[in-house]
Image (cartoon, rainbow over all chains, first blue to last red; front, side, top):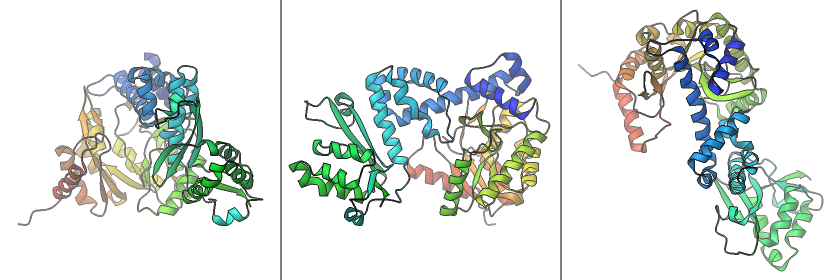
Length: 240
Length: 215
C-alpha cells in the first residue's frame, strides 16, 4: 500500500473507524494487542487532545454548558470541522458560530473567549499609532490592531466576564485587548462606543477622534483613551 | 526550537505559510537547534494534532528525506528530526525502526534528536530491544536528547510527559550520554506539571545519573 493511501486509512481510523478488513491490511499486531486495538489508541488520543484543547480555550463556555454537554457538542463540532491549521489553538475558530444555533449564552461566551485567544496570540503591531500620527489625523486612516477586539454581546453574556452595575443596557460593547502578556476585558464606555465602531472599520483617525470627543464626558476622557491606544499599540495606522 | 506541526512525513504539500513563519522565527531567535518529528500530522488538508508514525519502508525514507531537504533549504539551517513513540506498526514496514532512522538521517543529511523515552516506550509496545535500537544509532548526528516520563496503560506504555523519568529510561540514557557527550539534554514534563522545585529535582536526578563516581 502506498503512503498516501495508508495515511488516508489512518485518518479514517482516528476519525470514524473503517471496516476491519481495511484496518488489517494496514496495521500490524503488537505482542500484547491486536492491530485494531493498537490503532484505537490513536483514535482516543485524537478526540481527547482536541476536546481538551477546546476546554482550555473556552473555559467559561464549558462552564455554561456543563462538562458533559460541552464535550458532546465539541465532539460534533470536531466531526463537522476537522482542524485546518497546524496550530492546535486555531481549532476553535468556528465554535462560536457552531454554537449559535444551539445555545445563545454559550455562543456569546465562546465569541468573547475566541477574541481573548486572538488578542493573546496576535503579532506585535509594527504600525502602531504614535503621537506624531495625531498631527496627521486629517489624512491618517486607523483601525483596531490584532491585539484588540471589539465584541458586542448581550448583558448576561458580558456579566460572565466583567461586573456590570448598570441594568438598563441590553447589549454591551466589550474591548478584549492585550496589554503586555495579559488579555484584559473591559466595557467600552458609552461615550466611546461610536468611536470604537469607526475604529473597527478603518475610518479616518480624525473622524474617530471627533466621535470620541463628541460628548462632554468624551472630551474629558479622550486623551486617556487615545493614550491607551498608543501605549498598548491597540491601533494600527493604515495610511499616512 | 522544537516544533510539532511540520508534518514532515505527510503527503500533503508542506505548508508554505508555516514554513515562512518558521523561517522568520528561526532567523529572529537564532536557536541552537531547530527540530521537528519523524511523523505525519495531516491528511488531505486536515490536521490531527498528533505525531502519527510512519511505516518503516523505502517510500517513507525517500519522501521524508526530500521534505527535510526542502525545510533545511527554506530555513537555511540544519534540521534535527526526532524519533516518535508509537502504539501501532504497519504491515508495509520492511525494516526495523533503527534501520529506518539511521538511513533517513544519512540520506537527508540532517541531525537527530534522540528521545530515549520514546525508544523505550516503542520497544515495549512493539516487542523489540531498546538496547539494540540504541546500539545502531548514528551518534555523530545526535544534537539533542529528550527524556520524559510515561505511564503504564492496559497493555501498552503511554508517552505522556506527565511523570518522572523511569529508572529503566535513565539506565538507557547513561549509555547514550557517553556516546554523544556534547548533545544537550531536555527533560520534557508538560502534563500534570508539578511545582517548579520538583521539576528542578528531576533535572538534578538526570544530571547526577550520568556523573561517574571518583575511585
